[in-house]
Length: 452
Ligand code: NDP
Ligand code: 2IT
Image 1 (cartoon, rainbow, N blue to C red):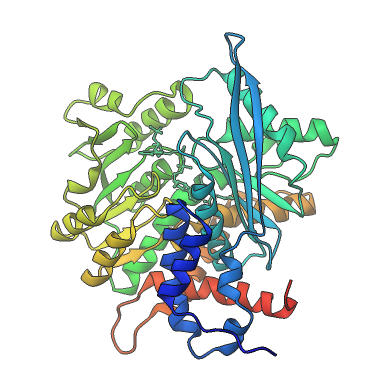
Image 2 (image 1 turned 135 degrees about the vertical axis):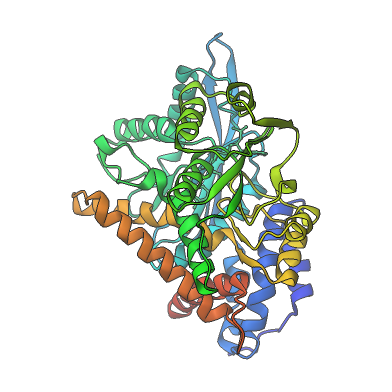
């Protein structure tokens, strides 16, 4: 066997940058993981010899395609679609689809890379993938969205399958879009198969998939607090975003007796010092999923609340913070402000919302900090359970799924403590724990396959 060249971390990252020019989000995600993996594999020659991390950081394949559709004025529109299949060492490719104008190949490569570790952490047999388009659903009619989704699936169907690659939702892709895409897949292939998750309950969807990511992020937060003898009850909470993940995180915080005082969207954030109770939350869900309006309208509707245009909520004093909007929405200055204002725990509902410098601030302050790949894994975990139900052609009861979600989130927490716990003190480096625990299973499966 040839002896592998042991590059150091800086040389490894320089290589990733050289091979992926301009793909800053992808390089950032690989950097964050590599920092921990290099330490872990230092004395484990096999992982070096078989170039495991180098191979996980090179997607199995990236498919890019044109998506044409006709808008309501009869104009032809052209968008770009992608599917990034990062790694299928431990199961079929699995991960969401994002429709947002900010989508690029770099963003989807970072998300597919993260998904590989996240899916491994769930303990379920799922590889990592992500896809989407730079299509902007905002301001489009239902018919325009339908035509776009049908055109998107007319190409995507060649690359996916119920035991090949199983997409789901993400930013800009919810129940409506999944319905249109599933309908088109079924029409093209003449197969009723579990090729997408997040489906409607009438056609193969699973109970609690809609709630799972937000609920799961709060369950993880709860586990971290319990680990140090604390709880959510009575805590003041700041949340960003107002989509699927944010609203369900809020719902669970309310059930546990916490008080959420902010939400946001790409326009700005709202601050409600009285707390966003369940009645106000019902209004927000209607605003966002039916009216498809802006969060600014909340402050016009509910007295006492204020709207802060163009700002993020991190300056609002809180005990707990849940970033649930998008990547790099919480930078090092924001992290410093949160810590200075007394924030004791951060649980990421979004993927990579905190940038590398922000993560360092949380680590130095030794607050409880859960990275997205651990904290938001509840969504894909219930997607995995949806796949199991589809292949067995059965539906499980809601209560059973609720307890499975809690069990899976506890399991992820335990794995993070196992690999990220210190000796002697209670501090857990959840970033290191999640990275190493996610890596080990994928890496050992890859070793079993040899060089493929
Ligand atoms: P939604 O589309 O339901 O909501 C997204 C929210 O984030 C909206 O409030 C949106 O505001 C805001 N947002 C999106 N992009 C930006 C931006 N560039 N700047 C500021 N705000 C922005 O998506 P989800 O709730 O599903 O996803 C939120 C996050 O959670 C993402 O990072 C996603 O990857 C992650 N996630 C989602 C899972 C799921 O099951 N859905 C699972 C695991 C992680 P606006 O409406 O104005 O665009
Ligand atoms: O980022 C994510 O984990 C998701 N968007 C959910 C993926 C899925 O397949 O349910």
